Image (cartoon, rainbow, N blue to C red; front, top):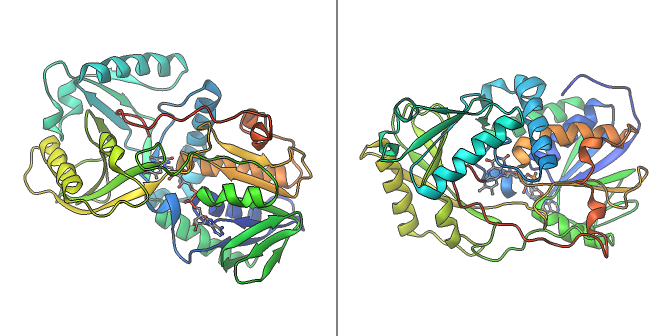
Length: 389
Ligand SMILES: Cc1cc2nc3c(=O)[nH]c(=O)nc-3n(C[C@H](O)[C@H](O)[C@H](O)COP(=O)(O)OP(=O)(O)OC[C@H]3O[C@@H](n4cnc5c(N)ncnc54)[C@H](O)[C@@H]3O)c2cc1C
């Protein structure tokens, strides 16, 4: 728990105990609130269970979203990351690409990020590719983004839940929320959680819950091959020596301990979807790309899972009261890049729930933009190129 703020008698029901809901519960309890944390799963589930967990503000549009992610990174770089230092790695991020369209994109990105004061620099390919010799090919360029890192969200979430249990101020309810109203949450079991405020942090379950209270909170749809779906492989490579996030033309990797990597092959995500079963060809493609990159022949795919990203219909974070008023009973925190953003959003929204001024950082990210007649879906392009997520 972060340093305790002034005592508050507010009782907040948070629906969803993924990374976003758990960090929010932690921030609320630190401010003296009572929290009931409702999740339909007794274990880590949803997007938090299948995430690349790269901490970054690397390619975010528009500028306000870039700024939000940058502040999110600052919170990780400061107090939140310090609390969970054993599960956070500040190794930076290296990109090495040779394909013409990726080279051009990387050149533009470095220039753009530097213009925003975000550390980014071109570096010699040979040095950047020290442990990934397969990335060296004619025309390759490399860049480094030293502010970025990665984390292991599972143990951090578990530690937050342990702290919440020890606080005596948080009750965890394992049940599905089927509807929310001005007075609380109706549960599938037939029970209820009555609370002063309800916050929807239910990831992809948030749209239906918002609708049950009469609000629009549209998310990117679940069609196969769309922006919401992505493969995530865990690949055993003994003593791989990789110490950072690395993006290349056809595979992105990060370490998962000294003998395993987490990998994404974004172009393969066209085949990902809700009904995807184990596909030996996908697993073989992951293995061969990683072995080529590392110039080794001993990589073994331990698992390939399909992650379901939580993406509001315009790609941007949703955070705040559903009806736009500070005294609203029902709030939402629903976002992509939720590992990077959760600690910041938790601080901001807990502050507002406890009577603080609305944060200008969240202007443009309020749920009201989707109200009837408001902004409609602008479509979200799937992440397919190095450095996208
Ligand atoms: C493949 C992939 C790669 C990603 N890579 C990155 C990355 O590199 N960096 C980054 O910052 N972010 C990344 N993300 C995004 C990030 O993982 C998510 O934004 C974040 O995990 C969302 O957390 P959440 O708590 O909002 O949602 P979830 O983790 O989905 O949690 C929602 C919770 O709500 C519960 N729930 C749902 N409906 C109900 C209901 N009706 N009643 C009760 N409980 C309910 C679920 O059981 C679940 O526990 C990635 C995501 C994916 C899928």
